[in-house]
Amino acid sequence: MLVSIIIPTYKDWNRLLLCLKALEEQTFPASDFEIIVINNNPADLVPENYPVPVNCKIVTEARPGSYAARNAGIRLVQGDIIGFTDSDCIPAQDWIYNAVDYLKKHKDVSRIAGNIELFFKSNDLTPAELYEKVYAFKQEEIVKSGLSVTGNMFTYKHVFDKVGIFNEELLSGGDYEWSKRASNAGFKIVYGHNVVIKHPARDKMSDLIKKTKRVVGGDNLSKTMAVLDLMKNLKPPLRIAFHQIKKYGNDLSFSQKLKVYSIKYYLAITCSVEKIRISYGNQANRE
Image (tube, rainbow, N blue to C red; front, side, top):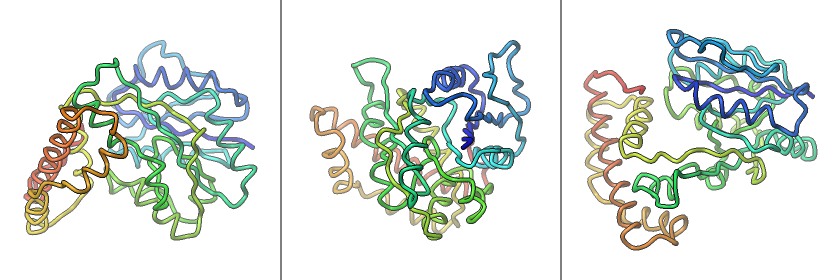
């Protein structure tokens, strides 16, 4: 059974190298899987003498957005099983093997939301890394709602044949939107605790802000709805934040927890302000 691995990339050749190296070291036979990398910036050419695995091809998709890029990959796959990850991710050696093994043994399962483990630059976490530790990539939680992020997801090609490809109009949230369609169509999803990729935690506030604005770029609210969203977020999210910090950051000191809460509140306001900016016709931020 052939497996197709799809990886969108955007100005990220250096980190993609680490991802491809990890895929070369998979316990799953290289002859049994293909890698399709989609360069989502045609002006950013593949670097000269860039090492590409023998089972990998790099194609270009001009339409902006990671979901347009992933769709370009889906159109090219030859495999019955499709695995998704991102260029900044590092798959564990048994990543593909464990996913395929689970699907073979559980015929009622059509989708796997894999385990995304964060790694940090040092043991002394920055405020941004503290926030990521508490809030980022909680696959085990979102899978309960039938959802998965595409940073680590496996499914069958026939699932896309049934429910359609990703919504290319969305610059963010397209993985959730597609997951809802798949769930509504009855395709069961599970959390793959041993289907592991490692993802670097964002260590700068500027990166968290960029991500927040990029995610908002996928929304399309009216001016009235955007203002109402800001009014709602002006109220500090005490109860929800307390629950999240207690569950994923209970080992943090009081001052660290306070930092995480402050960042959460700041990003919520940033999100609302960006929605207002876009509702007045300003261009969404992709970077």
